[in-house]
Image (cartoon, rainbow, N blue to C red):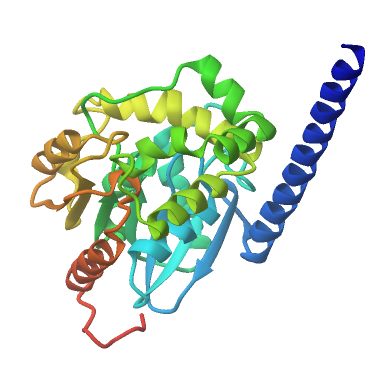
Length: 321
């Protein structure tokens, strides 16, 4: 019996060592991936802001979602925005290289977008906000309407009902890199469903895209402050938005809302209600794909590209500013 216990202990120790080696290898790859994307930090009147630029064409300010950063912005833009545009992807407050200011608000984040565009000498830019990034994208379109010729909201958080993560779960999974890594590595099937809509219907390509996005949230510890703000301040604020906090009728930019009918994280019914509250807004209803629009990226990219071309009067074959 003693020999069996020793054997089992040896197996457990060896297994733990293998897991830790894989974790360290994966985290090294995460750091190398982020560094390879070439972000910069610019000093502005709103504080330091991390950003990256990609492409050549009319500027599009890409506003990432919860647990994101400039890298998630580049990833999502690559999936859903055509090559006729230059992507400007900032890290919002509390994400990666952009610090969380004291007494932060969604309106302050919107002002920070204006400061970033000033620093980059960009007068006007179309805005594409993803998921929780819709809160500050909407505020930017309201408070700096002269700078926003077009607004696209992809799987947006919108007034209505929606899930809010309990704080103990958030603390465990989004402030500890190892816990999050182990969860998405060894329990992928459990966590993939809400992101991809209906479980069990993913193609190999779709599974790879879900894994890519889930892995792109690492290191979660470097995104935790921003994610906590999104989870417990901006998202509930938008769920329960009043007319004074979010006067949607003041949005003047042509607006496109993209929403999958089976999204479990940003409900389709909320997106439909949002479209009704923004004057002249259009809805691109996607028949499936969940919160990541899996299997529908080509359709979404075409819809967004056509909308942006029309809104900013970009000729079909013109790429420049």
